Image (cartoon, rainbow, N blue to C red; front, side, top):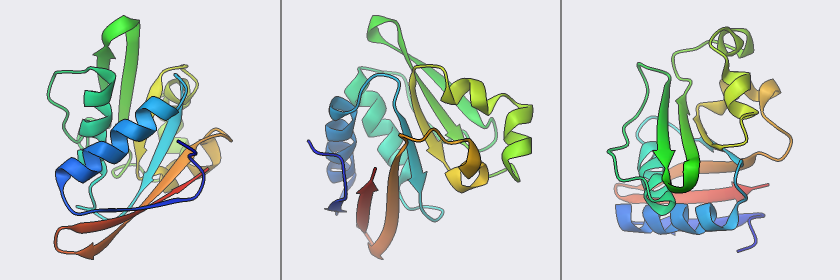
Length: 143
């Protein structure tokens, strides 16, 4: 899958899982995905689909209050799921070591990445999620 400038419409959780699975299998180990979108846009649903594609079987939830969730994956890999909604800026992110996660060489999903925009690696894959209907989301994937 070419991951540059993809437009995708999801009308269900299964559609979002399919997108997450495709991107998971297309990106190299150690990739960072920045998930842009309003509250309730589907960022955590995407994270659940991505985790499933990695073979993670434990429940995936939004780390809004814990800021980060770490999920071991088969083969000694990890998925780090960051929710930066509750931090203010890069300095606050650095205070809890967000840079170490971004540079870990593991899969990293970042919700509310605009809070740490200056810290994101250059090759971060960016996903913009927009509500287009009650059960419909428009996903734009940008390199």
